[in-house]
Length: 166
Image (cartoon, rainbow, N blue to C red):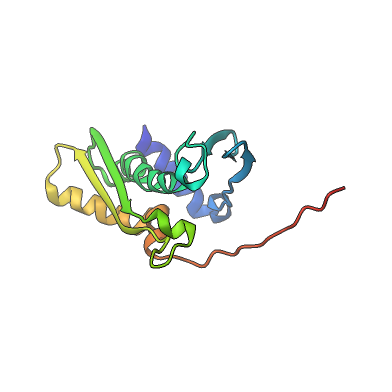
């Protein structure tokens, strides 16, 4: 079934490439101490830990970034690439992690706010030989947009608009 859907999309987008193009966006607004985030019909929250002035009521933006990486590994591998490449996948578990120094967020001397040592561990339950799973992972590393955004960072265009009181 998934293979048929993927094949249909492949054929459609081969004939009409404009139908494959999108411009995903997410809007975050302040809601108490947290950010209320909306993307289409989906919504979630982000917050900071108490030590950084937040309410600790939701995952941190760093946790959400890591969740995007781990989530893309699980669903893109299972739902798109495995059917497309004819690989049997029974289940997948992905763990994304990094090191950080919260002092950098406070501008403390000698500490950087950068995320260091980003890592992704993927465990796949499959009857396929290791070589075939290595090939699946290699294709994922070529096509996963979240992974590529992290390893091939692009400039982010930032603008600031100031709301004036009425």
